[in-house]
Length: 117
Image (cartoon, rainbow, N blue to C red; front, side, top):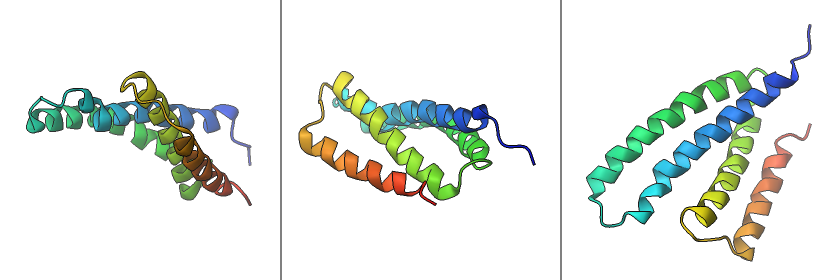
């Protein structure tokens, strides 16, 4: 049996990071447009989420060849938090405070336990 290549581990992570950028925009991008009609932002968010799924589904499918489902989920949570932290500070102008970082660190620790044999 041949060991998986480095790219077999890397590509799913890259796809999940890219998919998370789309999902974060879909979920939180509309917060800068609070006067836009709700139905409009829902439809736009659905359109953005379509591209998230186009990246997330293959990322998880490819990732399942080298990661377990719990590992993929733990990884996804950490990626989500990192992408959100950058998005919140740069796009929304709401940098995270110490307690947010502490909570994220605890989630990171929990996710790392997924990789413990």
